[in-house]
Image 1 (cartoon, rainbow, N blue to C red):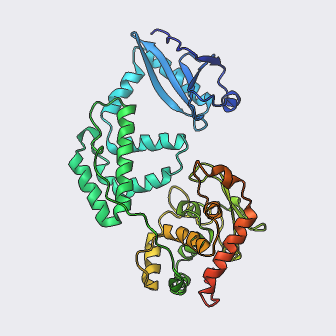
Image 2 (tube, rainbow, N blue to C red):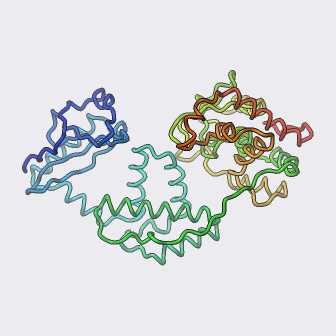
Image 3 (tube, rainbow, N blue to C red):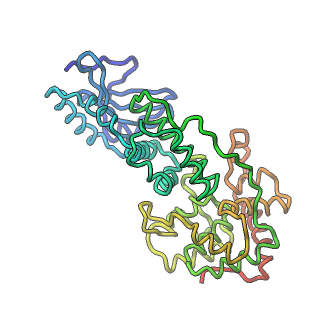
Length: 396
């Protein structure tokens, strides 16, 4: 076994928990070689993702094995793994070649799990939503090797999901399959084309659905009659905060300051924390839950995530009870924005209230304080609740 040829720009560093933690992104991909363990490297991407690799030259060819991302994998764990890989290479085994053999026989289910692990390592915000889609729609592909997946098979699945769950869910799932397969082709150096590439998405129309004034009384009555308190409180908080469904479902007690009336969402879709002012009606619901719900999450659940994951059955019950059609959970978020708009609030303040972000307006949004947002939210929510004849569906 030969030592690896040192790539240009590689730095030498004792890879410890402290040294790795203190490495800052430089705006370009940077590689560090551990001064203690031969073959152990740390690569830092432009965005700051830190990943351990074992890299050695074997039979004139530079081989590498991905060990894992920091901090999920600590330097001592990476060092032990590199030591094991060095031992295999000394005995004449090429670990990278053996890994390639396994990759060639991987099934779509195994590929998805590998992709999901990498997605979590790099901080993908929607990995739990991606897992939900895989569990719900893609189990039929789990035992099929990607090389055997046909374009027609994926098209049939796309249509089946549309029939069962709607065109939006079908399109999001197709995009997920395409992404996972593209990653596998790059990661495993497969030579076959992506069978999901080029399949047309179903045409989507931009929704403008929201709860209109005449629908509010029946909606609140239906929510108040919901027998499952978790579903009832989830729906109310989704409406009263204007937050995304995933944020409300994963709401944690540690992020709530009930005395100050604020909720700090640690990781938004844009990747930054945001503070949500809480209306008194939302506070009443949360305080009631605090007396009966223990643990980390406001909406605990039995699944892997630890929190409530799928409220669709309860949502369907509420709509049927209210006699309301074509309303989705995400439309509750649009409802708060619409009520803000009808009272004449500026687009900038509406964007801040709903935690929107765009490259052109980020700086302006960041200069808006929480107080005017809270005042606008309070006014809009009060106007909505006026439609209920002062019968507020609070937690029972």
